Length: 383
Ligand code: MG
Image 1 (cartoon, rainbow, N blue to C red):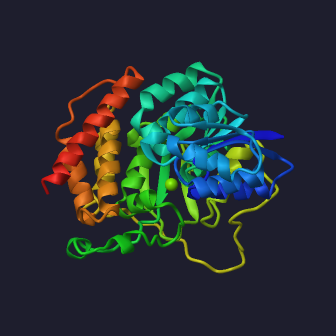
Image 2: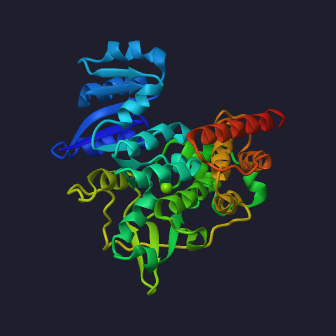
């Protein structure tokens, strides 16, 4: 039995992971779960799966949580809860949204866990630090992000990836606004931004998909995960979301991972690694005729993508700043305080204030992150 811990169990990835576990009860045992504030759902999940440890981020909800539990697990609240969950079990799924997931990534790797990583922001924000912990411990990362899972799977077809990979091609659905021009993009609404054409995901990542910032963050994530130079990473738009990414090798062969857009597949892959589960998710009917299209991304109307390449190349604390500024701008958009086109404008304006900083410690990361948040908030307030 693989002992699984889930940080962020009540979100989109967390609930789908519990679905995978409930369909494979003979393989997986849920040992710890954490949610920040969704106390009702957390208690319900705990009562169903009976993990030994239940963590809640918001301190004052602990009492309510205990009241709703019909058994007596260890309950941890506040900042320690994330770390306690990250230090439990064999496999830790980091499904926390945003920068808040960083302690899970660091603690899980430090304790030598297999980290099933759905929280790309921790890799983007603290790449150098995560790399240090990852390569000095017995911990390892199996990506849950569908594109990176696809790359991870395709890489398994090569023995000497360091010399045989010629490029990584990340696919992007293009989001709900693909094909729109500048004038119509100025008018798009929150509701339209939240209606993703192919994937069902949480609000933050859905908005990131609409600006292509999600793909930009994924470029940085791919660079960090696979140690591939930015000159070898390409993005193509593939509206059907069936080819989840491609690795091209030096001999011209390209290996792609193909399935329907179902997040349970990359989640199950990461939980079960190195084995594949018997339970299929997103398997296609190959006799059905279908069209798979590929095209270049529209970098003029979706400038977040080329900007992320620029920021990634700059390295150090630059991606930390980008991620923080983006989280603040997306939150302001979700709260209907700014327009969709302002998201990128705010991130860009905020980034002007960034001064090159190396990431030597977790404090460096926290400092840049909070400075970037302050700067972005003050720019939004002046809007
Ligand atoms: Mg993705």
